[in-house]
Amino acid sequence: MIKCISHKKSYPSQEIAEDALIEAHTHFDYGARSGPVNVYQCDDCGHYHLTSQGTMNARLAQLIKEGTLQRQKEAQYWASKLKRK
Image (tube, rainbow, N blue to C red; front, side, top):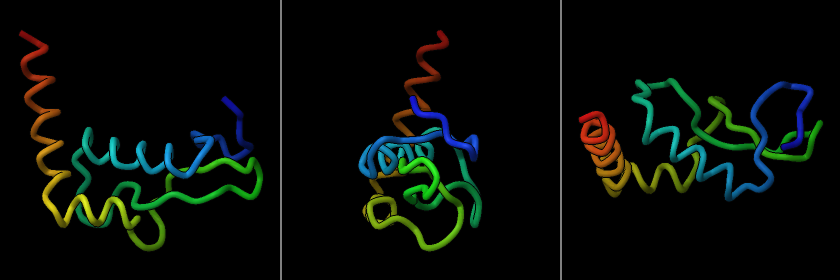
């Protein structure tokens, strides 16, 4: 993995960064106006990072609108709960 001078986690492509963005929203319960909302290409390392600034990523917004993200959160919750038993 390439190290960025910003010390942020780097993703080699926009698609992989978007997948990480969606996975973060699946695993963590971000409140309104918190957590990452989009990805950007870094001028320093050329890779992609998550950001909490700016407009919401189109893929993330669509998953929220469709209810898919909420279903993924519920599935993640139950998978982790059953794994503990």
